[in-house]
Amino acid sequence: MEDGIGTPTGIVVRLHGAFRGITRRKFIAGASVTLASSALGGQSRGSALASDRHRPRFHLMPPAAWLNDPNGPLYWKGRYHLFYQYSPVISNFGLKYWAHAVSSDLVHWKNLGIALAPTPEGPDKNGCWSGSAVIHNGVPTIVYTGATWAEESEHAAREKGLVPERQMVAIAADPNDPNLVKWVKVRENPVLATPPAGIKAVGWRDPSLWKEGDTWFMAIGSGEIGKGGMALLYSSRDLRHWTYLHPLAVAKPDPTVDLSRPWASMWECPDFFLLEGKPVLLVAGGNRYLTGTYSNHRFEEASGGQIDYGSAAYAQKTMQDEKRRRIWWAWLQEKRSPEAQAAAGWAGVMSLPRLLTLQSDGSVGVEPVSELNGLRRGSQRISNRIIAPNGPLLLEHFQSDSAEIEVEIELRDSHQAGLRVRATADGSEQTLIGYDRDSQQIFCDTTSSSTDPDTAKVPRPLSGRGIQGGPLSIGKNELLRLRIYIDASVIEIFANGRASLSDRVYPGSVASLGIGLFAKGGSAHLRSLTLWNLAPVSDDRLTSGAELFQV
Ligand code: FRU
Image (cartoon, protein in one colour):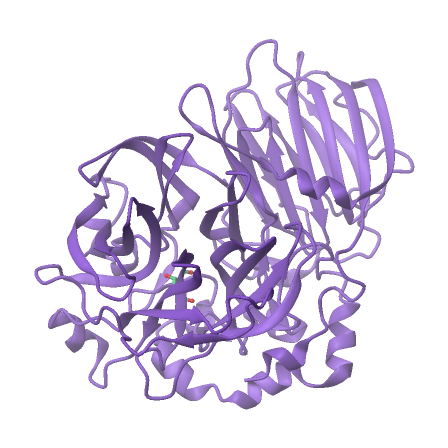
């Protein structure tokens, strides 16, 4: 995410242009908990959020306030646990907690509230940042990054090779509690207090863990100014005592990245795993994945791509579940102004769970997990139609802002073909999702998604208006196969099991519910289109349980 706004801390701050120049530390000091209580305060706030038409119905999010990265996904005794970065203030500068949600099917989540809170005067006093969860000797265990700002200036601290991050461990207080509600920080904390000697780290956070034999391995996101991102590798037998080995991986030189900028010189949220035996390293920036070789505990990048082409998605994180599936989540950021986010009282949504697959050419494919089909209710279907460039704007009787749409299109003579969603009858608001044959790109065009002037306020890369896309090569005899999830302001697009793109839209009109087909430069042919209305995962847009988030 090279367009991010850097802070002196090296944290990439996306979107919050209004706070440019303010450090996270100063912001935390200034933002009192009263903001938190106003974000969560009272029933009327809750009911306003429950009827907010931009707030999703089948995506995970806290009852109010702020969500960022997915953390520590874990499968334990028949339940999925998913944690996420939570702040009571609507800002990426807010004090961060680990919030916790549980599900038995990956789709219906119950918010359990705060699992980890910063300990005043503790090594995580300025935030419980991202990390992982594993089972060690039968005990669910979280390894995360604690933030401790130096008393001196950030700059002075970094010059001395000091970073604000510490690595921390917490264990489930009662492994027999099916909800794992209570977590206890271990007395050995911080289990790592400084980055390895000799590395002038711009940051040192977001541990990713895996086990080989009896040994735990941990990759920590880091990087050096002028060199770029790296993942530092450690090993341990007990998760409390760690030995630094060497970098697991370092970024390949990339002339397009300005490595004088701290935030461009760091890999946030590394996630390392084997996908059907093939080593894969995810890094947050650009939702990139790297594939290559892993030997002698060193990863050598050979190839790569992007799991999600949209700038809304960030901080991707995976787990392997009991079916040995590799499941992926990301934070879906807002694409409206900080003022609009504050007025709404909530910001940030967890992506839908996605399945990563290894493609025959060695690339990584992505598709929605099959459990999502359980949300399908009534359906409508049409088939065998010509999609002409001057065809009707909308399909009659197809309207929704809470749906899954599956469409199969023969591209034929068209240069572009696809679907129009969240559209008004006259097209004054509409979002285009399609395929561009000339550039071989899948795209989402939000140029006309909203007439609300607020959506034009945010600069790239999180602008609420514009075209985003990425490569997808569709064979001569292959259909364009799109699966699209529309959930209020969230759009998640899957193409041919090989590409995904997330976006956010905030139509100004309540009537922007129409769905249509489009082709440009020639006609395409619709094989079939099925729309399922999707059931909400709660009856109040997940706004209940706010009291569990009181801090
Ligand atoms: C990524 C990130 C992580 C950090 C967390 C703090 O969005 O900056 O590197 O641990 O957010 O909330």
